[in-house]
Image 1 (cartoon, rainbow, N blue to C red):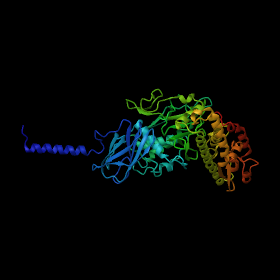
Image 2 (image 1 turned 30 degrees about the horizontal axis):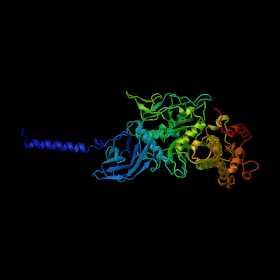
Image 3 (image 1 turned 90 degrees about the vertical axis):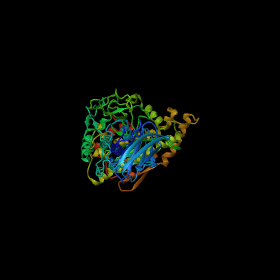
Image 4 (image 1 turned 180 degrees about the vertical axis):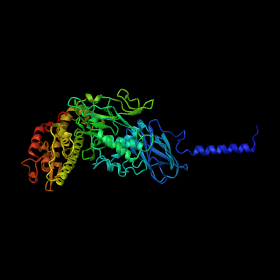
Length: 593
């Protein structure tokens, strides 16, 4: 059949229109440009604009990432300068400065092969976020947490609250993600128990995810806390939510959750967190650690062993005064003990999934078998003694072991870190007393000294001091640990007894070479060596009361020279209570709840 000229022109016009339509689709990736099975590309802000920086975060759950390539709208391809994050999960973070309008293609490479691809239209309408708490989203959450608290491992990292962390665009990959200046005046002052929930809900707000949380009781001496059915909040789903919506949910969360939320029994189903096996692939940044007494920390970074330095596992916690501090894993910070009143250990958020009929629910323990790519439910921590727990964690942190000398140096550094943190806490209490002359802070009775509210919670330091006394024991007992667990150390042919004896000598030397300095009541400074602090342990056992002068809080006794500037004492009835409770601190064992 012969086509007329007009018919041919009509077909050419149709073909041209089809080509224009298919090449101008703003966000649909080409068939050859798709996410990988274990690698996903995330962008921020949600709606990238011409001339404004575009942040690109590639996250993988199977292995490291080598490179990111970008192809601009003109077809020119080049590698992007990027920073790698160790894993799992592994990541690469890059910034595209001053992009122009049009579609950019990003390709993620490993060993020269493409493992993920995405196309992003600058100035167009970006697709909504994934909207599911799947493995890719959980991996991005982990990378986001790690980036919030990234810093060289030797750097002390502390903030007056979470607010300056979230308001720092260098730290917060989701800063102004919604493009509404939503982080400018965002209140962010969670305490210990609220921190994990606050960060989780903030992430959900930005990525349009649902949030689940439960009301729980605080348990008893013989039973861990129990929780009610979950509240599942969908206010962020399907459309960007204003900052007022996040404020409302965060207030509700902080009014509901508490220290018992993380201390639930390890085998309980009705919980927000579930326990996992102690394996590196399970303990991502963002993992919660709940100790038997109610304190919680959140993992933020694994630091591999380096020449002349121990590996580290770093975490952050929040205090009643809302300060947020990064700390290393060790026995003086991560308390572990079997307890009838709690289920301590490492736990992760229970997955929130959409069922086939569209219902949102948290997965049960039975369903958490690892088949969904997330850590499987496991209760192995329940069977571990404290010594076995710490030995297992040491193997994860230093898989090839470290020398006894290096182990001592790492433990000494951790103790010094603990002391420096306590200096700040005690000084905070001193400032409060100076600005409230004549005020006597009420002291609760019994185990409530560790978990009350109000000024005592803000300025007393019983929990911190218990940890400090434990830390001092850990350093002192390192030689015995070498004898008991020689497999954790690189002894290089030495007998464990010989290596332990060398650490005893090293400890005797370091007691005089290491010291702290605190500010006395009259504003003068006073230096205390570690040897003096060890000699003052009896005073430190009752040094947590902010109604006492700072000198007594640092263990000064009647024969101590620095006591001369002491200006106040706790009331007699409070001193009597502290003597009654001294055995808890002397034995470094908290009482039953």
